[in-house]
Length: 212
Image (cartoon, rainbow, N blue to C red; front, top):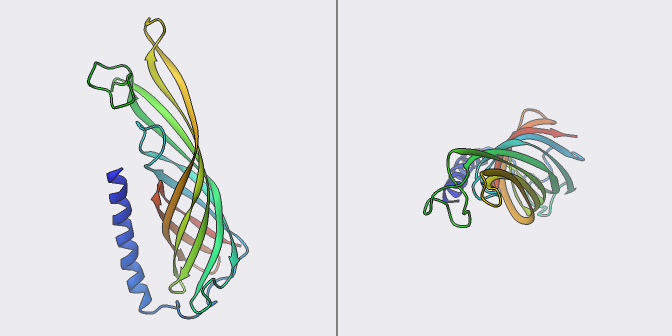
């Protein structure tokens, strides 16, 4: 978890540097001077570092977002901003060492764990968040996204077979509701196509923005 927050802080520092440079020639004080769109579609690659189960902290996958503006200029009408509802689906996959081990080796809560067996996990996130965009230049906009996500995870573990005759592979699953938060930047190539970078908890993503 500490490594995850270090990644977030490092990426946030890069975003702030870009934003400071953009403000010099910015349009933030020109309300409404940005592309007006009905929906933004964003297919992306995702790297997840905070998800179930505890052994599989990191995962790689793909996802899709849709963002629908309900303020085309606002809620602050004196600056160049808009607000949208964003929702979608992210999938991430991970493999990790597992299996029975000697006393003293397992992490807390995992009595059967060792590094000579391989297990895998798949996690599905369905986030719904409030997206607040700030348009700094004709090219660069930044946003924050607080919200919640339904998380469904499935993973397998090697555990002793009852009554102790060898090893069996058991499947596990879990579904929870988790708070999420992302910050990001969008870099437009023209009025309809751009690149979006998002970082936060539980993941970061890089994808294509399509404004329709």
